[in-house]
Image (cartoon, rainbow, N blue to C red; front, side):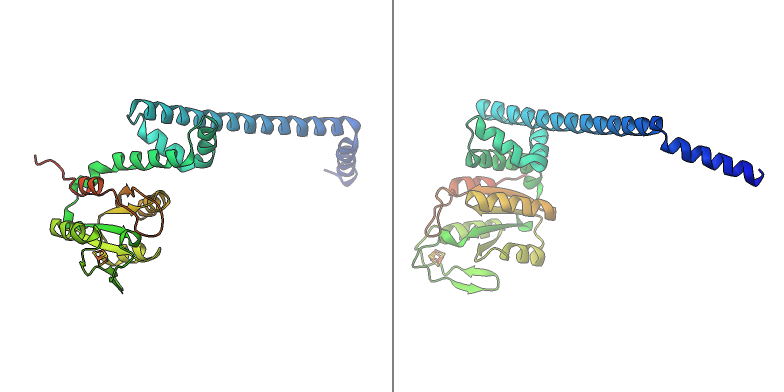
Length: 244
Ligand code: SF4
């Protein structure tokens, strides 16, 4: 193309870009794109809320009937939108602690099949040190608190019983201890005993490590001389896969 024709073409394009029509087209296109994006965002938000309400509905139904309906759906909901679900549940009168208990029970129900298949020698139990008597003479070791079997608390016989079953039993002195022992002994399944918050965090921690975990909630909260739910712990600890 000769030089003067190319210059004409260029001028035409520049004129078009500066023409009022083009500015109107450009602003219309921008507005439509923004509206479309806004619409998509609102739709996603509505779907998100709808899913949260469905999960809450299933949670309430499960609690009412004492059954776990659609456990995988509930668990997925908890994984991705726990905060929203808690708030919606609170609006309908279900408090955070009740929801946490429900979540732990659900988690146990979903894990018990896998747990039962694992040999007791490949399992470990982590007991909180607050179960001890305030006069406990246990010594602190690298493997946790070492019970002297003085008879001042329920840990005495329970530890013996659990060890006879084949379990590796630990009295946990601090928060980083469990991770260290799991790394060292690599149990395939663990039972965590403690208060609500400890159990919930422990379940998430073990899930992330890919270790099968069951939680047993203490009967009482606090830092000193708490009470474990021993019958429940023994029931969970005794889980075995049926012989075929
Ligand atoms: S039985 Fe063991 S854990 Fe309990 S108070 Fe005595 S030494 Fe401590």
